Structures are given as structure tokens and as C-alpha cells.
Length: 314
Ligand SMILES: NC(=O)c1ccc[n+]([C@@H]2O[C@H](COP(=O)([O-])OP(=O)(O)OC[C@H]3O[C@@H](n4cnc5c(N)ncnc54)[C@H](OP(=O)(O)O)[C@@H]3O)[C@@H](O)[C@H]2O)c1
Image (cartoon, rainbow, N blue to C red; front, top):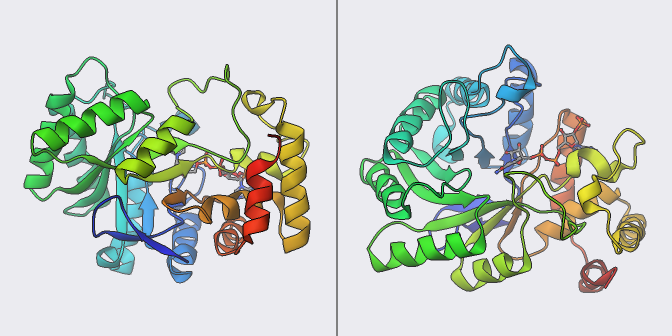
């Protein structure tokens, strides 16, 4: 797997972070351990979780299950030092409300550290923006965590371009840590202009341009559209992605997949992984799925194939 530095930092990660959202809930402890073992066995070093994962799976879950099982695995394998661990706060769960106030940031970080059983979160995300708390309060609270050694660097998820640029400009002017990584919804199919994902924000062209210019790494989430590229009848393409160019883009995926001997789902991940500063989150509910996704990010597409995929439907 290719490695990259996160933003302007020296933290080196593979370009396929592991999405740990359903570890500890949809995947039981043994299956979670097996997926984590597979990932690091293939050279992976970058694992993404959040305080809320994954309370919505069922009434018996409260959130924190993903961090907890990841912590148990880190302890059992004694491999924490070789890994880059990302977590997040900002969405409500259990008894915690939404927001990025100083109090919330301090409390949630302590809870996540406890569940993970580690001293430092390498990359700590604002999971969703908070328009009520001044950005200065949020950034100063993150700075305090870095100062205390509880966090190394910070990232933003589900932010607009304006808010990310404003926060990073404020950070630069005031000697505060900036958001080095953006985590946004992004896949090969383009969302319709009127397509809404609620609090989740899709990567826009102007955001991608900002990140390139400002040297902010992009982690792409839900790139597999929950399995929709597999073409299974129970996995239709979400309606937010049904636009004038959808058929042409799906056809281009199928064409390149046939040439390379891969699946269209894998070509989505190969297309993302072949772009600079782009880190597609890989996830899988079985060893076979995760293996396919890790194989995908190692596929080398030719410049002609990349151009064909880029331009399809234009
Ligand atoms: N920042 C945010 O707001 C945010 C939001 C969502 C996710 N995330 C992060 O992104 C990660 C990935 O998100 P996601 O689960 O939505 O990703 P996704 O890639 O859209 O969906 C993963 C699902 O696709 C199916 N799948 C996986 N590999 C496959 C393959 N090779 N062929 C066919 N189907 C396959 C599996 O579903 P089945 O088992 O049902 O087949 C799997 O659970 C999360 O773990 C989390 O870390 C972040």
C-alpha cells in the first residue's frame, strides 16, 4: 500500500484507512479482531473510529462499542505504537448532546481515551460542525488537548468549505492547531445538486480545490455506497446519486473493471486511491470483502483509464 503524510504533518499513513464503524456491534468481538488482524497483516496502519459508533445499530447499543473493541484488540495485540488511531466527537449519543464546546471536547476525548485504552488519539476529528460554539473556543479546546498530549493532530468532518477555510485561517493567525485532514462523503458517482444526506456532507469541487491548495488530506467515506456498486438487486444506487451522468459513469466503471479483471466496486476504490492526497476509507463485513477492498487500493490504473473514468458523463 502507498503511504502519505497527513496534511502538513510528519504522520505517515497508508492510503487506505480502515473504517471501524461497525466493529463491536454488527461485527462481534471475534469477527472484529479477525478484520483488524487482516488489515494490519496487509500492512495497514490507519484506523478510523468515533465516539458514537455505532449506537444506531440496535436498542442494545449506546455508542462507544467500536472504540471499546478496538481498545481490547490493541491491548491483546500490543501493537498500538505502530498504528495511527483516529476518533471523533460532535454528534449526539447516549447522554451526550451534539456540539463542539470546550467542555464537550475535553469530556469526550477523555471518554474515548478510556474506551480505547490509550494515552493519545493521533487524529481527533470534529465529526460535524457546530455553528453555535465560536470556532475560537473549539480550536482552543483542541489546542489544550494537544498541549496535554492527549491528541496529536486534528481533523474536520462534514464541514463546508467556508467554515473549514475560516477555521484554518483563524488557527494560522493565532498560533493554534489547524485541521490537517478533512473527512467527507465521496465516491465515484456524483451526487445530484439537490441530493441531501442530512448532516453528512459530500465532497464538493471547491472543497477539493481548497484542500489541494491548503495541503489538507482528504479521507473519503462511504465510497462503496454500502455495496451499491455490486449491482445486487437489494442494493440500488441511492437516489441522491441518480443523475444525468449516472449510467455513463457506471458503464465506464464496468469497462475498466473488465479490462483490469476487477469488480466495479473495486475500481471505485482504485480510482480514489490513485489520486494524490486522497485516502478512501475501506470497510468490509467479511474477510472476503475487506480483502477485495485492500486489493482494490493496490490496483494501478493507467493514465488513460483514470482519464476515461474522470471524464465519463461529461
Ligand atoms: N465522517 C462521517 O460522517 C462518516 C460517515 C460514515 C462512515 N464514516 C467512516 O467511513 C467508513 C466506511 O463507511 P461505510 O461503511 O459507509 O462504507 P461503504 O464502503 O459505503 O459501505 C461498506 C459496506 O459495503 C459493503 N461492502 C464492503 N466491501 C464490499 C465489496 N468488496 N463488495 C461488495 N460490497 C461490499 C458491506 O455491506 P454488506 O456487508 O451489507 O454487504 C459494507 O458494510 C466507516 O467505517 C467510518 O469509519 C464516516
